[in-house]
View 1 (cartoon, rainbow, N blue to C red):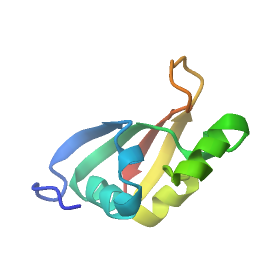
View 2: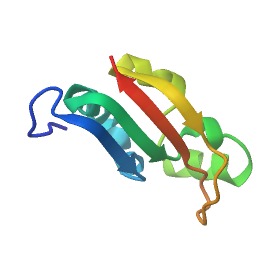
View 3: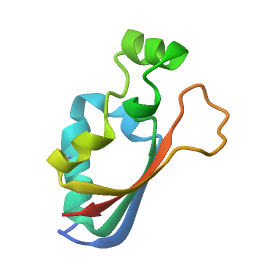
Length: 103
């Protein structure tokens, strides 16, 4: 919930299927990423925007899994500038590549 780095410490930060394990502190985690990022935060996460149908939706619902939506990132200090979800992956939930600029 609190990264041990100064504000704007890194040009680029990235998460890969990490936020999915932090649903209870998702907003605090995203705010910390925005705080320590000087330029970009790259996220490969199973955003609900891409997992809102079929078995992906039921998994999210039944497990109270990662509930993050891309349009909610701004409330945590991140501005999505690229969203790309069309890449192969072998997991059941479809992650999306999101690059956000620290505001």
